[in-house]
Length: 61
Image: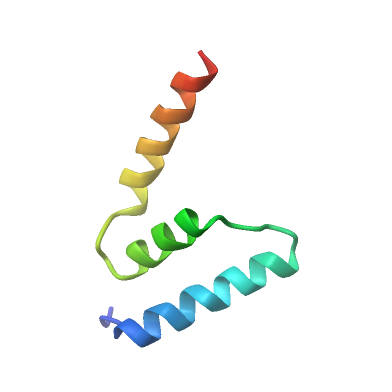
């Protein structure tokens, strides 16, 4: 897998965000930044998912 440049990563994330918006899925700025961090390899999707599940599970309790 090749490493994307900053410009390529931003472009790809913006494409995904636009596609989701067409389907009616609107992301917050924080969610968009998380997507960019995942694409850039700065954080794993699995670790963010676990963090968010723990956070929202506590809120529901």
